Image 1: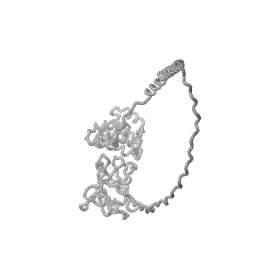
Image 2 (image 1 turned 90 degrees about the vertical axis):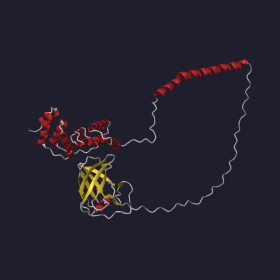
Image 3 (image 1 turned 120 degrees about the vertical axis):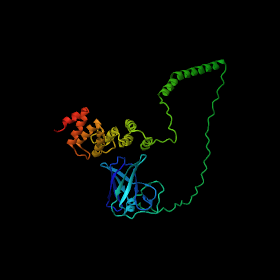
Image 4 (image 1 turned 45 degrees about the vertical axis):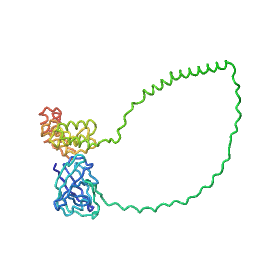
Length: 362
């Protein structure tokens, strides 16, 4: 999709901020492709210009008030000196290229901190940033002290314990002693069997019943996919907008708002009014409860609400009207347009829109 972008040079030579608007993408992992028009080598990499496309990964990408800010260092800024315009492409991990535009590159001071001898081999280039201080010289090798022979062991005196002679047991005589011994053995065996059946066996059964069921271990080498990988694999199947709306609901019910956002964004760009309505709620400052982890942006919420409202969605017309009535998160109030959209929702028998119209100032 087309983007709008601008470049702001920073006071420090060789540094600038590339500000991109109208891009609904998560800032984590975004990469840039920069292309010039002059010469056979037109694609920028960390080691200079190439004939094939390379993806540059800035050290920091942040979202401020709905705009994405890419912080660029000398590896990019110094090499773009003297170039008037560049072609910019933005890629999101596991999703693909999410926007492209042409940007005017302003004149700025260079830092001269480029190392042309380094050449990256990967398709995605991680920028080195500012030069790091040289490591300290290695310490001299450690020499162990000379070994000292231990003194010979002192012989221990041989100790023997004196034992008293065991008293002799007079052999039992007659059958009486054997009968008494047999009775004692029978009594001991019976007592042991009674204790095992009435205590130990019951205790073992209780422990076995209380033990949790055994769980099968996770197969070795099996790793859980990230949200972006899961969504990217799903979008690669070219689902319909209706299927993407339903899939986003599944992500939302599972508590995965990032996955729901990525799927609904693709469906919204394809023209799905329900997806546009869902996407607007991520930015709506009036949404209750607010979407955790997403920064409210009244202008961006109004844009997606308006698209769904123009498609005839009564809920989008009502939410758009309420947002225009109160404003917030960078969007100024507009009571006149708010009344117009609430009236359109009320004409479709939206009860909440009718109540909101009664509270608007005459």
